[in-house]
Image 1 (tube, rainbow, N blue to C red):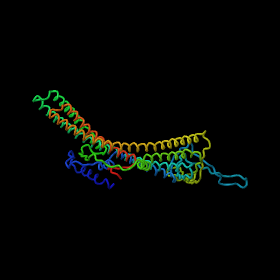
Image 2: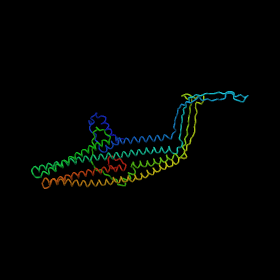
Image 3: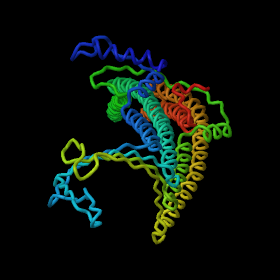
Length: 455
């Protein structure tokens, strides 16, 4: 939590002390990519939902563990009989006749009240309780891995969006430079047209290209606004909060080779932990299903209190209280194969999960290799794009100089300008793709590298 403290405290201070309706009075919050990722991990609501799931699974573990202990239950009931019960008991024996001389008849009440308190302790449940507890514990551990996976996905999404924003800002700069160059060429063409050196067609062509450049600039600026809104959403920021995202598309080295990257992925990927826990949980499901094949043994202790009134204080017909203790065994010996086939079904599901686990290992290796190759490709593209940009700049400079000297055409200038703009865009895309590939391979390795700097 300490590593998030500075950013979170700054955010809380602005939210608490900024006047209502004027949240920008204290100035905008400035975030670089690292600070943005930290804030997203702290505030994103989809991530908070996964944290709540982890807590719920923890309580599920406590519940399953509690099933090992004794249970205490009670019941309290009332019964109304159709007639009063009665009983006769001898009171005097006549030795002369050898018969009972006198009898006493006791009449009970039609109202019967009974209170029962039961304590039950399971002794053996065919491994059902143990397997259920193990399954709950595994589910809790699996949810922790699911939280790690969600954090990795969120880190990658924030980083990718942030890099797209930086690239979009560079595209705005390129569009502005392109519009400036085209406006300059339009001015030159108008001057030449005014003195009769070029036809009006040159002016019209320049105007068309200026119009297209203005539309490109509008689209580029709209993309910047869209990506900023997307980042605000990912970071869980209020709609009226002013945020400034700062940074540049800077090259960061990636020094790991392919084998080391793959080994890290197989060791750290949460997906692999999740799949492994799924297999272990399926094995516990097998044991739970097979528990019906074994006898179930439990011990119980009961206390009963009876009476003619709600106080259950006894009656003329029955004792006030009694207790019982015993051990019971229940064993279902035959169910037409229901338990057997249910266990076989559980085994097949386990085999399915094992096959999916092996497939996941292959997919993880493929993801790492794909991202690694993309890094190599983007690195080469950056080198080629930089060289192409220098050549495009020189080509534009020469075309412009030739046109101003009236030894070149307007079309050559416009073509050179379009090539220069395309070369700048290719470099921006290559630099952005490289950084996004680096972010992607760290996610593929199961590592939260929020700064993208080599570890």
